[in-house]
Image (cartoon, rainbow, N blue to C red):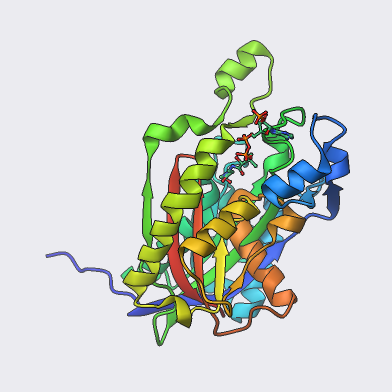
Length: 329
Ligand code: UT7
């Protein structure tokens, strides 16, 4: 007989933080290298400007800054963090995981630490896993981070991607709560479409060719998948959480494209009072970081407050997706 681990009956998000790179990159700067227009970019994607990281704004630095904000809000002692989970596709070392260095910098130097590769669904994957780790008894508190420096792997001359991708970080502290603060996750993948968003070449191929690998995207199939299939997954997340659309305060989808957000909002028939995240306009598509960045932007704008019920959904390369209902700290 082996003892089974036992955790908290319920878990929730106790703190959220984010880091926005300093440098604002307007569409005009993107247009120096691609044949497009400000009007096309704005009407097709909703993006007016994005942030790109400077040299000192590394994946580590942005992660630690976001994590410190989340820790401060949670009020917990960092030494009590049992696991650090970093979702990213732009920590450009195969090993070790950046999570181990984040753990040291935030004051949790012996926590379990690992990275996950779930692209734009990364933050939702991290929060879902954190929920299970806390409830399963494997960690008292979990630090879940979504962070990207997509500007490092974006081909500035590719008109299909140059205007979309951007940089930033977001973090959440997940820990025990008296009531459920995170609903059941609805998640999945479709590897038959792995090629629609993908690194152009493996690192060995790139080295052999003296080329730098980039993120390539066949945008339209992704757009159609996201607009239709993802609304279904979001509805399922509401259903399994036992939450009706009328009870929601916020809808925070991955900030991929304003038109995808609007299509999902219509399909879900969200009532007028549900505030919808529109951070893509100023922040671009930051993949794993976009949802916590959008939440903090909504808080700063006075659109979101503590106790709000939010439907969050991440989706992207893989293809992978994850949707959950959360209560804001
Ligand atoms: O974050 C991970 C998940 N990613 C996403 O969810 C992104 C999903 N995809 C998208 O957001 C959209 O597909 C894009 C914004 C990338 C593109 O918008 P679209 O409406 O799907 O455009 P399209 O690729 O179907 O192209 C429409 C037209 C084409 O011209 P024709 O063939 O109609 O004459 C393109 O050549 O727009 C042209 N086009 C451009 N024109 C000006 C493509 N890129 C550009 C450009 N500027 N940058």
